[in-house]
Length: 284
Image (tube, rainbow, N blue to C red; front, side):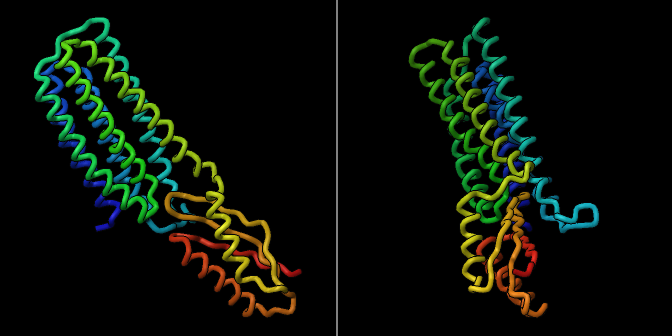
């Protein structure tokens, strides 16, 4: 099984399990902070489905309609996931404000605390696995999914802390206040994810350190009779696109020029996985 698809599937199963737990305990206890966590996990589940389908599509080979491949499906997935999180945050704030205006007593605090701890532990393990595979495969969609679950860890611990404070103090207003705090963390997550996923859709250059490495690799292969210019880079999903103009001695044969370009392309592909290199040969 494809590593990325397997990781996305694991995220779907874990989120489904946690949603059932949180909704059940949230309704039993009447805690808006636990219900807000259930909503957060539901959005995580939707995001996991988006990630699952996007990683399957993004690895599809280039075709006649998509000659540059399907890598940007992962970036579109990240944007959709960010918008889902944004909606979830405002829904949580809306429900919390209602709870502040019309306060109700929270029951079964101990059970709610236990569910939040279980949720945090499950998401620690799943998010770490997703992050590891996202780094191995350079997958934006999986990294976005891992970010969701990482935030869920923090918010679960936050809700658990709020429930303990409520049990100690007897002040039930703590519950909606914690829910609003959770929502603000989710909004921050949404903004960071949107910025990361949307940037490649505008064909922004690769990070400066990567561009510098590429430039160094090309320069290493250049002799005194060679130079390069107009180096351009961009990224789509986990694919990196690199092109530049290479100036060669006009006395070089086509075969010699081709061999020089092959060596440069091979060096770049050794340094960067999923690199697509285009070299435009020119004479001095």
